[in-house]
Length: 450
Image (cartoon, rainbow, N blue to C red; front, side, top):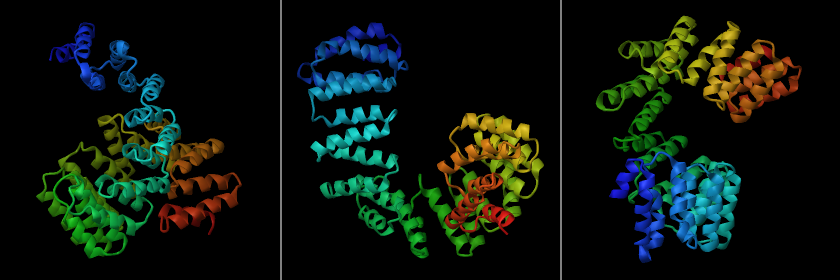
């Protein structure tokens, strides 16, 4: 208790002799005491100071793997990756078969080199094939690298070794969905029904999506309807409304959202936005805008309403409303990257106020430097200003991050302007094949290739 109070009071110098005494008194439980060491300092904000004191406290115990593990853990918290890796290696030299140490080492490696972290886990599994937690972490690292087929092989192996493990069954099901293997996904999700699994409503939501993918609409509605109030309830209600609208029952879908909004205790804004999206998808842009404009009367400073209403206002040619909404949103949330981007892109697309457009998009990029849509906007404003080479660089980068049809439309136009017409047409053709019916892409293709 005294040690805890000294941590809270930021008195690390006074704390050290007390913790040293605690470790001395651990006796046969010393290894466990060393593993608990970092928990004692968990609430202390200066993680580098914690690393220093952990190194001092473990000095008498450097012959124990747990002492080096404690140091590696403190280094991880202090973002001292290389020091942490060195200590994890020392722990593994003392205990080569320690699963926790190899997983900590991989965690430390992941920031600088995800591939190196994955290789550390793979190499360990080669000599420790039954290390379940290590294989789980390895499979998850493959997911992070978007190597879905390889990840599924690892999870399938876990499924054979641990057939009743609900976390493994769930992971295999989710991966199967990502690979569009709907039958395997459904089979594994259904294995979880009736089991003690914490995310059962997520399972029902996924089963609904699988049924919907298979055009089994009544079954999909049943799964969505079984999602209980909680984290997934709103998503299920939105799916029900969307499914009704797809079946030509737009008003029934809207009514479902309105009733769900009135019945629940959740934030009503997502329901209003979803209803607006139903109208928008049905080609009723004016009605969608009016719904959001009315909602803004009750909540004039609601950021999502301001943003979505601005986008719809632009589609209706109400550029003044667009600018007023986005200016207000920027004032309310100065870090809202997409507000700056939407306003800057609007100017660029209309070939107006290009210097101001570029300033807005530069600000958006500072806030979200890897967002493909903002990078696309920068490419587009540079194209409008006549910097074709700069435009191409940005648009190619945006398209490499996300092959979106509207980014493809812009990239193709810039390639056309550079005289690379075959490449432009190939870009448009492939994007149109992957995204049939996209209006922006279709309009650009029609304009250049009648």
